[in-house]
Image 1 (tube, rainbow, N blue to C red):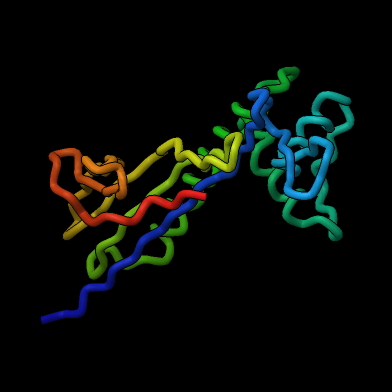
Image 2: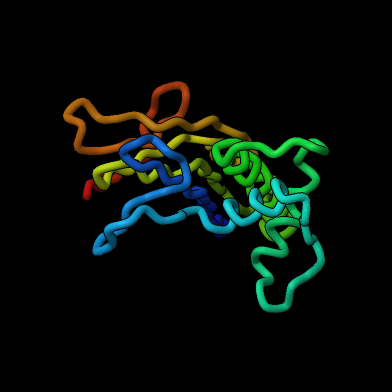
Length: 175
């Protein structure tokens, strides 16, 4: 019997919404004034709006440089998308990169794996939500679509195959 390796790859972008339903702005504990969240995307949008976009590699901010280089190809020339759209574009880019890395690093003939992606939305009053993106498992070379379902008592979130069979549950995290 050969050893089967199992992997789970998960990624959830962040998006913030305050009680006024303003995307990208939030009230932080101990602060009286509203402040920017989603800083990298907000900064990128501000550059696009000002017309002074720099896509060269900034050695003092490699992550921001790479983000801009990766997303610039997903934008339409002359259009500055809103923060929600920018977050979804980021999700798409990360999913593409994640699936590429799976192809490069996982021996799918000896491995089962799952991909779970989405956007984690930090809402008002310390509530957190998930916008589910792409979710699937590959078992014995066959791909199975996955989805999230709330249990009947609301205490757990279950990951289920689209056919309805549960793949496990996790306690819902509340703040």
